[in-house]
Image (spheres, rainbow, N blue to C red):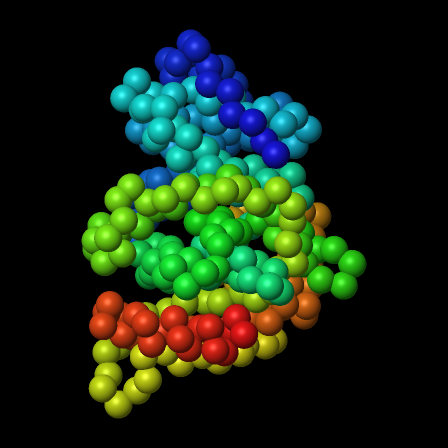
Length: 272
């Protein structure tokens, strides 16, 4: 696993080469830039405005962080685990999905969604029913003979304040990190449905073909797509994923009054 090293010289001394070129830019829905990727001289760089700039490559296990002055240690560690790790591991040949996950008897199940949909809340609700947490924000995987392996990566659970209040646990209890990979048992694509008294709290559909491929790749982490060979491998990995691992669409109605029924449906249809 990659190891974080913090540069003592700080953010003002970033040795970013003048000829470095931007390879990717990530934005929030409102257009705010959340991250910018650069490449130069065999190095990859990821700048998170207001937090830090990280430097890594595909050979060393060390990631060097140049923290901005107002960035505290915990904020830096969270950024490393949530943002840098999945992107850096993808650059090294693995794949990563934006999602949370739990451990079951059959392996790891991933819950993927755009921000603030409720993937962490759903995973934590299942934890309260006896399923150990596997990931929060990034599920890293790789093809293996006959299937897919989910790789253990460090994480810290984070939820919206309404969810924390609902569960009544603050701070959230720590989870023992996994030591060995698990089979990736299922991928669930979460989507909030409009409230309706005429429809069930959760509607679960197994996807295949282009719907499954488009759905999972919507939530894929990647550092850059300019490298044609790496892009081709990435697409092939996702084709292998939908061929070997069941992919489900989970459309659920929001609201904690329906939450228990949503968990029931997920357990009955996907985790059983």
